Length: 500
Ligand SMILES: Nc1ncnc2c1ncn2[C@@H]1O[C@H](COP(=O)(O)OP(=O)(O)OP(=O)(O)O)[C@@H](O)[C@H]1O
Ligand SMILES: [Mg+2]
Image (tube, rainbow, N blue to C red; front, side, top):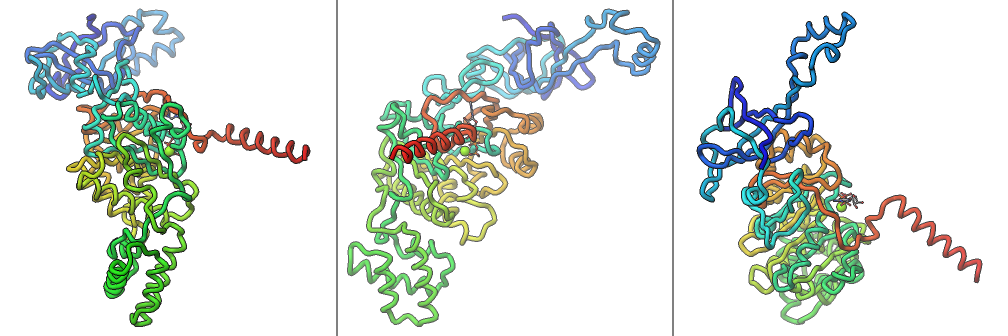
């Protein structure tokens, strides 16, 4: 392979944490910021990442000479071979040394004069810890034209967070992850469950290839079996309840469970009304349970059932787009996430990946418990899920508003464009291995560009997310398309009216 540059000497280096090299060819620009390079050193093959590129030209080094020359009406370019003295100098951070197939820390600097080469594909796969054979393919590693194939255990087992501002491509990327999981042989797939507040994943149910593996549940088809709730689970949905009221509820539920196999919230209400609980305790209990009953969520069966919720190798989508009240959405997430986690704990269902869109709404940081009914279970899965292969993928456009307990347990972060300074600051504090230069480039990322940092890759990498192959949901439609679609429908309807 042809070398691209040569290590040079400077006041502070080369040292074991940084070095500089001058590029042999300053026209073709064979190198970019963020690219990986390799050098042969006495310790083995040293791998480094280009942190920055600087241009220098000694003709333009002294401000007074340049200014004096240009003022005199002459031009430096015309008088001297200025071009020939322009150099590109790259600043690089050593990452590791490879010797006899063993990857080691860099403890010794390269030497001035060492030649710098573009990195070999196999070496890059190796040092990034990619999974060539069975990894999920997110797209191409920027500058290297190799597939970003991430090992699914490393990516999901210790949870994943997708963080980016609105419109940066989070749901698109999540759809690609789902595609990749569904593309595996059924025996090798986890169960996939998606909490979809905007109906953005419905396309999977219309796609020829994925239709048979996809089930969608929406406001009409989701229900919670009242008789499956223990008294403490019911009490968890009414955080306003006092200790005394919880005790009374416990007795009511115990009595109902002894008397009937199946009962409804109306039965709970009747039982409370007929009980001897004093009226001050009773009245608020009744009003809260009326409140729960009015959500229309509670019935005599769980839908999805456990089998539908986590059918081996299937995708189950909770389309919550028709539900207005956040509390109702949180109750759904709280109930079904707990059911999933408990079932997985006792190995009744296969390992699962639970994707939660708008995760900051379901596990908000700093909110009172009353407005964060699903936070507890999400934090529990985040803390304990890895032991049971109960995996979370949290997706949010407001990382700063997401529970820090949950976010800090996500060992891989995919970061796309973010411009809000509070969110950037939060990402800086919560994403391990993110360098200053990566952080500075996050606001300038294009749609579909994503940094991956943490467990899934040994070093942070920039990925160009591939195009999706599955059908997109109509709910995520562009404004222009939606206007056209709506107006076309209206015109059709008018035609019909005229006709009739
Ligand atoms: N890798 C990509 N290649 C091509 N188009 C993309 C890519 N990623 C995203 N897009 C397009 O960008 C738009 C926004 O993407 P997406 O809906 O995934 O954003 P988002 O981050 O989920 O936004 P929101 O927070 O509002 O839900 C979509 O129209 C999508 O088709
Ligand atoms: Mg989205």
